[in-house]
Length: 474
Image (cartoon, rainbow, N blue to C red; front, side, top):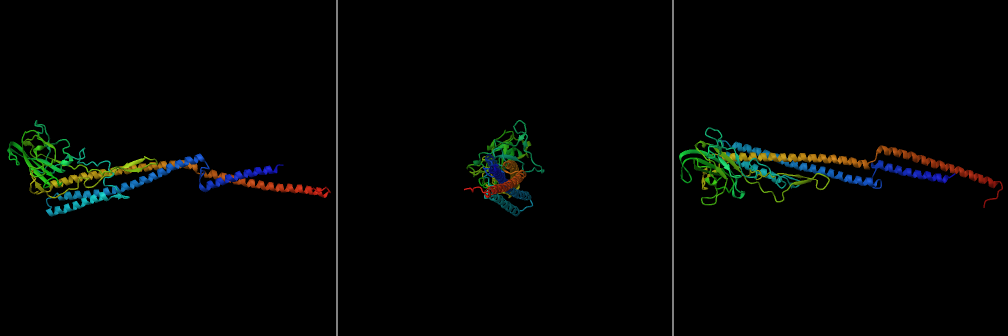
């Protein structure tokens, strides 16, 4: 009987069972089927690569959430600026009343000026993690103003603030626009209507046909033009380069049926007579007749947009696990210069003539307040556009976060299918191995008992032979 051979086989099986039992215990204790490359080299490598992707997606979600927080800060600042601009507009409307004294207007202007300073403070001080958000350094798409043309600056026709004697708004179309009896605009812009930015000052300009005379005499030159109409130009600007006073007023006599006239027809304000003149608008005046008296047309002539900072560019946020998976965030500049409202005023202006000589104080603040109201309305439109842009970017970032979360969940499931232990199957296997261990141990114990009994029998047999007188074994 091969007792030793049987025992060795039992011991081998018992050792294998105990190793498998230890493996099951480690899996249950850690929850992992593959905790190192020893358990499953190829599976471990695949799981680690997938886990790298999961970690990248999870960090991308955190990046996107941080970017959303920054955009929320910017949007909150824009909401505050909107409230400030609404207040400024209310003050402008308040100023357009003849019941206001000069002191009242000065007090209103003081509040407007202080509110403009607050807009600039918000623009320069709105930060996130030390990064300024609204100074224009992250602006990639310029805000479109209702008062801007395709070039970003220029003359845009606006509603005239003047009224006819009956209280109605004057029309801007004249009867004999082309000299052939075909109606057209009182003034036609040449090109964009504005000369290069270095040679003009922003202004609000109004043309009005004020009267007719069978023997019209030009007030500036004293020249008799015969039957003609009088055209008054009022150009308003608080720009220091404009002239000695904010409001330029000049009236010229124009012969009827004299044909469209170019911009040399009306002198432009600048320095005294004989000095260089500042161009305020490039335009052509229509062919006029007596029937055109009472027509009026106005233009807002804007500053070019401020130059972007030298290091301007989008704010990049990585929204994926791989290099290059980024999203660009654009944040506008919202200073008063960006919004073209830095110099608005509702005070009644001084008047200067075509020779740049001050003629006195205007009795009305109608033109300054009209200019201020239109520019504030345009600024409100720009802020609304900026908020819509930020809101759209926040929606886009939320989709990025949702997509990254979905990818992370799916990849985590893949890692789990490779690494995680099947608890039910592992518990079953552990129970099986424990039973086999107990059986193996019992078999060994039984074999030990059997061996003891066989040995005893053998010794007893040998002992009996010695007692019968057999020769002792040497």
